[in-house]
Length: 158
Image 1: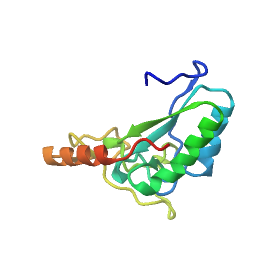
Image 2: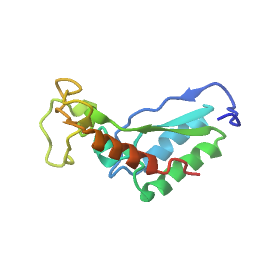
Image 3: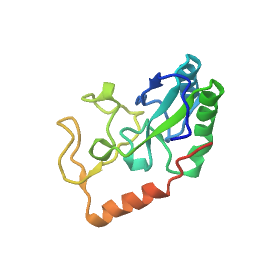
């Protein structure tokens, strides 16, 4: 971080956009974040990027849990850099919020085309709130497995 110079003090905070399939970046993200970079922001931070498929908030979140996710994120990084902005990424693991619906779908019946959900995990069996399912309480061994998996993920697409 010490050698990074921003062109100004304007930064774009990470935003959960729920616009992806299979955790893969797409043209929408390139345009969305690239436009903010072209608009002169100095720092662009990509949204909560899951390091494990069950660590996503929704099935529509972006991910970085396999090598196949790298090239699509490289496209985003290049678009940001081409506009002279500095790219960043928010690494995420949703925990007890994982496996839920997009915010605008909470409380609505599951739609036939909606991707399946999964049970979130957490340090206790306490739901995030009344709209969320109770997470699986992780054992110490399971916590270590999550930590190990997360530390193996490549986090520096060029």
